[in-house]
Length: 291
Image (cartoon, one colour):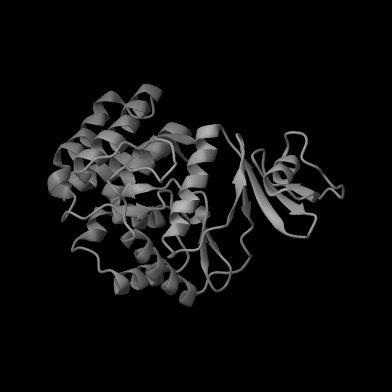
Protein backbone atom coordinates (compact mmCIF):
# COMPACT_ATOMS: atom_id res chain seq x y z
CA UNK A 1 0.00 0.00 0.00
CA UNK A 2 1.30 3.41 -0.87
CA UNK A 3 2.01 5.75 2.03
CA UNK A 4 1.43 9.10 0.34
CA UNK A 5 -1.55 11.37 0.85
CA UNK A 6 -3.50 12.08 -2.32
CA UNK A 7 -5.67 15.05 -3.21
CA UNK A 8 -8.48 15.11 -5.77
CA UNK A 9 -6.43 15.53 -8.97
CA UNK A 10 -5.60 12.73 -11.41
CA UNK A 11 -7.56 9.74 -12.66
CA UNK A 12 -6.52 6.73 -10.54
CA UNK A 13 -8.50 5.06 -7.73
CA UNK A 14 -6.96 7.22 -5.01
CA UNK A 15 -7.76 10.44 -6.86
CA UNK A 16 -11.31 9.22 -7.55
CA UNK A 17 -11.83 8.39 -3.87
CA UNK A 18 -10.59 11.83 -2.87
CA UNK A 19 -12.90 13.56 -5.36
CA UNK A 20 -15.99 11.57 -4.42
CA UNK A 21 -15.56 11.59 -0.63
CA UNK A 22 -13.93 15.00 -0.25
CA UNK A 23 -11.23 13.39 1.92
CA UNK A 24 -7.50 13.12 1.40
CA UNK A 25 -6.17 9.61 0.82
CA UNK A 26 -3.57 7.83 2.90
CA UNK A 27 -2.94 4.80 0.67
CA UNK A 28 -4.06 2.56 -2.14
CA UNK A 29 -3.94 -1.20 -2.78
CA UNK A 30 -4.72 -2.42 -6.29
CA UNK A 31 -6.79 -5.61 -6.39
CA UNK A 32 -7.22 -5.74 -10.17
CA UNK A 33 -7.04 -3.42 -13.15
CA UNK A 34 -10.54 -2.13 -12.32
CA UNK A 35 -10.68 -2.41 -8.51
CA UNK A 36 -8.70 -0.96 -5.61
CA UNK A 37 -8.97 -0.65 -1.85
CA UNK A 38 -8.21 2.91 -0.79
CA UNK A 39 -7.62 4.13 2.75
CA UNK A 40 -8.88 7.61 3.47
CA UNK A 41 -6.92 9.98 5.65
CA UNK A 42 -9.26 9.31 8.60
CA UNK A 43 -8.49 5.57 8.36
CA UNK A 44 -11.70 4.43 6.65
CA UNK A 45 -11.22 1.89 3.87
CA UNK A 46 -13.27 2.29 0.69
CA UNK A 47 -13.55 0.24 -2.49
CA UNK A 48 -13.04 2.06 -5.77
CA UNK A 49 -14.21 0.41 -8.99
CA UNK A 50 -13.72 1.60 -12.57
CA UNK A 51 -16.12 1.04 -15.45
CA UNK A 52 -17.72 2.78 -18.37
CA UNK A 53 -20.38 5.33 -17.52
CA UNK A 54 -23.47 3.09 -18.00
CA UNK A 55 -21.93 0.32 -15.88
CA UNK A 56 -21.00 2.70 -13.06
CA UNK A 57 -24.41 4.33 -13.16
CA UNK A 58 -26.20 0.96 -13.18
CA UNK A 59 -24.22 -0.41 -10.25
CA UNK A 60 -24.74 2.70 -8.13
CA UNK A 61 -28.49 2.70 -8.85
CA UNK A 62 -28.68 -1.04 -8.15
CA UNK A 63 -26.95 -0.78 -4.78
CA UNK A 64 -29.20 2.10 -3.71
CA UNK A 65 -32.34 0.22 -4.83
CA UNK A 66 -31.35 -2.91 -2.93
CA UNK A 67 -30.52 -0.86 0.17
CA UNK A 68 -33.85 0.95 -0.05
CA UNK A 69 -35.66 -2.35 0.59
CA UNK A 70 -34.11 -2.53 4.08
CA UNK A 71 -33.72 -6.29 3.73
CA UNK A 72 -30.19 -7.30 2.72
CA UNK A 73 -26.94 -5.56 3.55
CA UNK A 74 -25.10 -3.82 0.73
CA UNK A 75 -22.05 -1.57 0.96
CA UNK A 76 -22.78 2.09 1.50
CA UNK A 77 -22.41 4.10 -1.70
CA UNK A 78 -20.17 7.12 -1.14
CA UNK A 79 -20.78 8.33 -4.69
CA UNK A 80 -19.51 8.15 -8.25
CA UNK A 81 -18.19 10.19 -11.07
CA UNK A 82 -18.13 9.33 -14.75
CA UNK A 83 -15.89 6.27 -14.55
CA UNK A 84 -15.49 5.50 -10.83
CA UNK A 85 -17.78 4.14 -8.12
CA UNK A 86 -16.76 4.50 -4.46
CA UNK A 87 -18.35 2.31 -1.78
CA UNK A 88 -17.59 1.26 1.78
CA UNK A 89 -15.50 -1.88 2.26
CA UNK A 90 -17.37 -4.90 3.60
CA UNK A 91 -16.01 -6.36 6.88
CA UNK A 92 -14.21 -9.70 6.63
CA UNK A 93 -15.62 -12.89 8.12
CA UNK A 94 -16.53 -16.52 7.56
CA UNK A 95 -19.79 -18.21 6.55
CA UNK A 96 -21.81 -19.89 9.30
CA UNK A 97 -25.04 -21.92 9.20
CA UNK A 98 -26.87 -19.32 11.30
CA UNK A 99 -25.78 -16.48 9.04
CA UNK A 100 -26.91 -18.47 6.00
CA UNK A 101 -30.33 -19.13 7.55
CA UNK A 102 -30.76 -15.44 8.33
CA UNK A 103 -29.63 -14.46 4.84
CA UNK A 104 -32.32 -16.66 3.33
CA UNK A 105 -35.01 -14.68 5.13
CA UNK A 106 -33.40 -11.38 4.16
CA UNK A 107 -33.27 -12.42 0.51
CA UNK A 108 -36.96 -13.31 0.62
CA UNK A 109 -37.69 -9.85 2.05
CA UNK A 110 -35.65 -8.21 -0.72
CA UNK A 111 -37.63 -10.06 -3.38
CA UNK A 112 -40.91 -9.15 -1.68
CA UNK A 113 -40.00 -5.44 -1.93
CA UNK A 114 -40.96 -5.85 -5.57
CA UNK A 115 -40.39 -3.97 -8.82
CA UNK A 116 -42.64 -2.05 -11.21
CA UNK A 117 -42.28 -4.66 -13.96
CA UNK A 118 -40.16 -7.56 -15.16
CA UNK A 119 -37.02 -6.00 -16.60
CA UNK A 120 -37.57 -2.68 -14.82
CA UNK A 121 -34.21 -1.02 -14.03
CA UNK A 122 -33.56 0.52 -10.63
CA UNK A 123 -34.67 4.15 -10.34
CA UNK A 124 -32.04 6.27 -12.08
CA UNK A 125 -30.40 3.22 -13.64
CA UNK A 126 -29.88 2.93 -17.40
CA UNK A 127 -31.77 0.51 -19.63
CA UNK A 128 -28.43 -0.59 -21.08
CA UNK A 129 -26.88 -2.11 -17.96
CA UNK A 130 -24.38 -4.92 -17.33
CA UNK A 131 -24.22 -8.39 -15.85
CA UNK A 132 -20.56 -8.78 -14.98
CA UNK A 133 -18.64 -7.95 -18.16
CA UNK A 134 -21.63 -8.47 -20.45
CA UNK A 135 -24.35 -6.08 -21.62
CA UNK A 136 -27.83 -6.63 -20.15
CA UNK A 137 -30.73 -4.62 -21.50
CA UNK A 138 -33.54 -3.81 -19.07
CA UNK A 139 -36.74 -3.61 -21.11
CA UNK A 140 -39.92 -3.73 -18.99
CA UNK A 141 -42.54 -6.40 -19.63
CA UNK A 142 -45.65 -7.71 -17.90
CA UNK A 143 -45.40 -11.41 -18.75
CA UNK A 144 -42.33 -13.20 -17.31
CA UNK A 145 -42.09 -16.13 -19.76
CA UNK A 146 -42.27 -13.85 -22.82
CA UNK A 147 -39.96 -11.24 -21.27
CA UNK A 148 -37.38 -13.85 -20.21
CA UNK A 149 -37.31 -15.38 -23.68
CA UNK A 150 -37.19 -12.10 -25.62
CA UNK A 151 -34.86 -10.05 -23.44
CA UNK A 152 -32.62 -12.58 -21.71
CA UNK A 153 -32.34 -15.99 -23.38
CA UNK A 154 -32.75 -15.36 -27.11
CA UNK A 155 -30.42 -12.33 -27.39
CA UNK A 156 -27.58 -14.33 -25.83
CA UNK A 157 -28.43 -17.44 -27.80
CA UNK A 158 -27.96 -15.38 -30.99
CA UNK A 159 -24.68 -13.98 -29.65
CA UNK A 160 -23.46 -17.48 -28.80
CA UNK A 161 -24.33 -18.75 -32.29
CA UNK A 162 -22.61 -15.75 -33.89
CA UNK A 163 -19.54 -16.39 -31.71
CA UNK A 164 -19.48 -20.05 -32.73
CA UNK A 165 -19.84 -21.39 -29.19
CA UNK A 166 -23.33 -22.75 -29.93
CA UNK A 167 -23.78 -24.46 -33.31
CA UNK A 168 -26.80 -23.36 -35.35
CA UNK A 169 -28.36 -26.84 -35.22
CA UNK A 170 -28.04 -26.87 -31.42
CA UNK A 171 -29.91 -23.59 -31.01
CA UNK A 172 -33.23 -25.30 -31.72
CA UNK A 173 -33.44 -26.90 -28.29
CA UNK A 174 -33.09 -23.52 -26.56
CA UNK A 175 -35.68 -22.05 -28.92
CA UNK A 176 -38.06 -24.89 -27.98
CA UNK A 177 -37.61 -24.01 -24.32
CA UNK A 178 -38.54 -20.41 -25.10
CA UNK A 179 -41.64 -21.52 -27.00
CA UNK A 180 -42.72 -23.68 -24.06
CA UNK A 181 -41.87 -21.20 -21.31
CA UNK A 182 -45.52 -20.40 -20.50
CA UNK A 183 -46.06 -24.05 -19.48
CA UNK A 184 -42.58 -24.59 -17.99
CA UNK A 185 -42.34 -21.44 -15.84
CA UNK A 186 -44.66 -22.54 -13.02
CA UNK A 187 -47.33 -20.37 -11.41
CA UNK A 188 -47.32 -16.67 -12.29
CA UNK A 189 -45.56 -14.46 -9.74
CA UNK A 190 -45.30 -10.68 -9.37
CA UNK A 191 -42.02 -8.96 -10.32
CA UNK A 192 -39.43 -9.37 -7.55
CA UNK A 193 -36.59 -6.99 -6.70
CA UNK A 194 -33.58 -9.04 -7.83
CA UNK A 195 -29.88 -8.72 -7.17
CA UNK A 196 -29.59 -10.19 -10.65
CA UNK A 197 -26.04 -11.61 -10.51
CA UNK A 198 -26.21 -13.60 -7.30
CA UNK A 199 -23.28 -15.96 -7.72
CA UNK A 200 -21.04 -16.88 -4.81
CA UNK A 201 -18.42 -14.21 -5.60
CA UNK A 202 -20.98 -11.48 -4.99
CA UNK A 203 -22.05 -12.90 -1.60
CA UNK A 204 -19.72 -11.73 1.19
CA UNK A 205 -19.82 -12.92 4.80
CA UNK A 206 -18.72 -10.97 7.86
CA UNK A 207 -19.40 -13.75 10.39
CA UNK A 208 -22.82 -12.40 11.43
CA UNK A 209 -24.31 -11.08 8.21
CA UNK A 210 -24.22 -11.49 4.45
CA UNK A 211 -23.43 -8.52 2.23
CA UNK A 212 -24.27 -8.39 -1.47
CA UNK A 213 -22.02 -6.60 -3.96
CA UNK A 214 -21.87 -6.02 -7.74
CA UNK A 215 -25.60 -6.24 -8.52
CA UNK A 216 -27.20 -6.44 -11.94
CA UNK A 217 -30.42 -5.33 -10.26
CA UNK A 218 -33.77 -5.37 -12.07
CA UNK A 219 -37.32 -6.63 -11.73
CA UNK A 220 -37.49 -10.35 -12.34
CA UNK A 221 -38.61 -13.76 -11.12
CA UNK A 222 -37.42 -14.55 -7.59
CA UNK A 223 -36.39 -18.09 -8.58
CA UNK A 224 -33.72 -16.54 -10.82
CA UNK A 225 -31.64 -15.31 -7.87
CA UNK A 226 -31.95 -18.72 -6.19
CA UNK A 227 -30.88 -20.48 -9.40
CA UNK A 228 -27.78 -18.27 -9.53
CA UNK A 229 -26.86 -19.32 -5.99
CA UNK A 230 -27.04 -22.94 -7.20
CA UNK A 231 -25.01 -22.34 -10.34
CA UNK A 232 -21.56 -21.78 -8.84
CA UNK A 233 -22.22 -22.98 -5.31
CA UNK A 234 -22.82 -21.07 -2.09
CA UNK A 235 -21.73 -21.93 1.46
CA UNK A 236 -24.54 -23.54 3.46
CA UNK A 237 -26.90 -23.23 0.51
CA UNK A 238 -29.52 -25.52 2.04
CA UNK A 239 -29.58 -23.28 5.13
CA UNK A 240 -30.09 -20.26 2.88
CA UNK A 241 -32.98 -22.03 1.12
CA UNK A 242 -34.47 -23.12 4.44
CA UNK A 243 -34.43 -19.55 5.71
CA UNK A 244 -35.94 -18.34 2.45
CA UNK A 245 -38.79 -20.85 2.45
CA UNK A 246 -39.63 -20.14 6.08
CA UNK A 247 -40.14 -16.50 5.14
CA UNK A 248 -41.67 -17.00 1.69
CA UNK A 249 -42.62 -20.52 0.53
CA UNK A 250 -41.68 -21.34 -3.05
CA UNK A 251 -44.10 -22.70 -5.65
CA UNK A 252 -44.23 -26.47 -6.15
CA UNK A 253 -41.61 -27.72 -8.59
CA UNK A 254 -39.18 -24.87 -8.07
CA UNK A 255 -36.18 -27.21 -7.92
CA UNK A 256 -37.12 -28.59 -11.34
CA UNK A 257 -37.01 -25.05 -12.73
CA UNK A 258 -33.48 -24.21 -11.53
CA UNK A 259 -31.96 -25.11 -14.91
CA UNK A 260 -34.55 -22.99 -16.70
CA UNK A 261 -33.47 -19.92 -14.74
CA UNK A 262 -29.80 -20.76 -15.32
CA UNK A 263 -30.14 -20.62 -19.11
CA UNK A 264 -29.48 -16.87 -19.25
CA UNK A 265 -26.31 -16.76 -17.12
CA UNK A 266 -24.99 -19.91 -18.81
CA UNK A 267 -25.45 -18.36 -22.25
CA UNK A 268 -23.79 -15.16 -21.04
CA UNK A 269 -20.83 -17.24 -19.88
CA UNK A 270 -20.82 -19.14 -23.18
CA UNK A 271 -20.38 -15.85 -25.03
CA UNK A 272 -17.71 -14.58 -22.64
CA UNK A 273 -15.81 -17.78 -21.83
CA UNK A 274 -16.52 -20.41 -24.46
CA UNK A 275 -17.85 -23.81 -25.33
CA UNK A 276 -17.89 -25.42 -21.89
CA UNK A 277 -20.65 -23.10 -20.71
CA UNK A 278 -22.53 -23.58 -23.99
CA UNK A 279 -22.63 -27.31 -23.30
CA UNK A 280 -24.03 -26.64 -19.82
CA UNK A 281 -26.70 -24.36 -21.29
CA UNK A 282 -27.68 -26.96 -23.86
CA UNK A 283 -27.87 -29.65 -21.18
CA UNK A 284 -30.15 -27.41 -19.10
CA UNK A 285 -32.36 -26.74 -22.14
CA UNK A 286 -32.64 -30.46 -22.97
CA UNK A 287 -33.57 -31.26 -19.37
CA UNK A 288 -36.24 -28.55 -19.39
CA UNK A 289 -37.97 -29.77 -22.55
CA UNK A 290 -37.76 -33.39 -21.35
CA UNK A 291 -39.48 -32.58 -18.05
